[in-house]
Structure formats: structure tokens, C-alpha cells
Length: 85
Image (cartoon, rainbow, N blue to C red; front, side):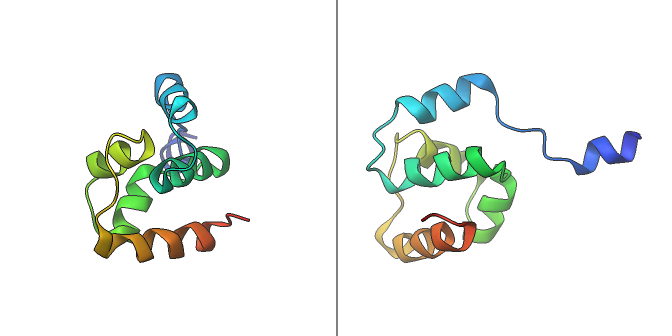
């Protein structure tokens, strides 16, 4: 049973979810954050997929920073891959 818990995504902290939901929904990083919360996609996975740090992903999710122009296409592709409609 202990291994099952380790393999399951733990979900997002309430405070993080509130920050994402209160941020500008037109921001591409916030869109990514909303999608990841909805589908319970771990920040670590997103960071690996985009080859950036988890801290960077959190700052995008909350709208504090935008992805650099060279990352924008990768973020858009990831949104599609993760199932944004």
C-alpha cells in the first residue's frame, strides 16, 4: 500500500489552486496551470516535458512570469498534448 501512495500524484495544494484560479486566464501559463490542476498533471512532469525548473512552472501557473518567446511554441504544443480543447 505504501508504494501505491508514492506512485499516485498528490494533487495541488489549496493555496496554489487559489492562486492559479485568481490569475489572468488569458495568460498561457495560467491556462497550462488550470489544465494541469484539472487533469492532476504533476508540476514535475510539466517541468521535465518543457526542460525547465518546477519553480519556473509555478511562476507561469500563477501568472507571475510569462514563458520566454522560445518556449511559447513548446507550451502551446503541451497544452494540446495534455488535452486543452
